[in-house]
Length: 92
Image (tube, rainbow, N blue to C red):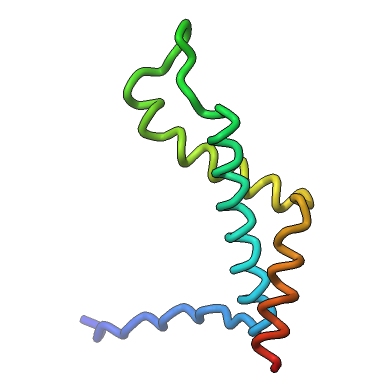
């Protein structure tokens, strides 16, 4: 019987400080957009064809993903402003 050898741990990707700042800025913009979409009434259950309790519970996840896609498509420019402010604070 052959000895059992441990499996090598997968390497975790290392992100630069700029990449981490940009990701944080995009998350903030996505959170803001998700709240704006929620305030606009997106994600509310339709009275005629509602999905019931399940739809109510998972609508926040849908709003968050929609907001992330909006940011990936260019968003409203908020993440760039946040990124620049974070970078300036980090550099200074």
